[in-house]
Length: 224
Image (tube, rainbow, N blue to C red; front, side, top):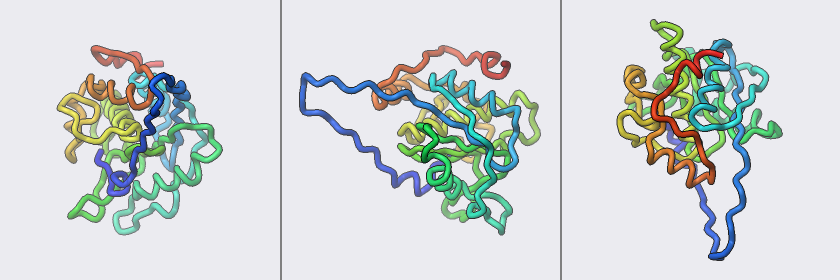
């Protein structure tokens, strides 16, 4: 769940009014559109949609499934470059969709560059302050029960959405934006909730109010 070099280059520009009496315009509702890519676990799709709504309160919408973009395929490792997938989502899926954010979802293995490694397998990637993210259930699902795979995937989805909303890594252990540090086992230790400073960041920067939870009620997300 690391960010790419491309993600770091995205700047968030905040306009500040000089009129003390002016009231900020109401923020437009945020709609997160989930687009299945290539091979995907259809049973996880409604779960991640409920997971997004549970943590952020955002409306979610399912878009038609798409083939994986050919330009993203990394032949030497037979997996898919996440940076190229984000470019595809921004250029070919987002325009005209009516979506605020597009979340690609697949069970194909995805990767990015993590120096000194040219091709490093990852769980997901999100553009900091951007409009697109991608999550793979490939690594989250290996060798574990479906319920654990679902919880891992929901946590990764909400982490990557946190990047799109402008948050970097640096969250304390137990916070959504804590870096997985290259191992899925870190995710299992996380409760899946936003910490107070993360909630404040999202609410202040996007002028919204998001749900408050003291514990993650997983049955509400895992079951219809």
